[in-house]
Image (cartoon, rainbow, N blue to C red; front, side):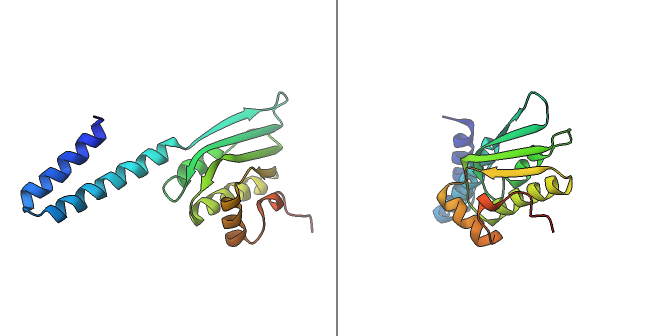
Length: 149
């Protein structure tokens, strides 16, 4: 049995024995299981960075589930400070679960745009695309540098 499963069982049992209340034990165990689950999802988020031979273009391949708890990790992973002039963020291997995921991607895009970098977002699945359109007001394929005014 994995250490996390053992810990959840110990927490549940301890609460039941300490309170003589099965409902509180189940509630405590379920809460502990949720915390462990979220922690595992957050640690599964990773970004593979591929740079072109001339260093001008960088591709970020994002993997995992993006939601409120994993957005900080994503923003850190998408930060750049090199000489790149173009960045492509490939989201084909993820699913965005909530508004905070969409807003985290938008924050990363805005940071790159402010640095004068051409940014392209690709690969959103249908549900993530619909969520993006609802929150941001445009489709992800329209994401890039805004037209010059």
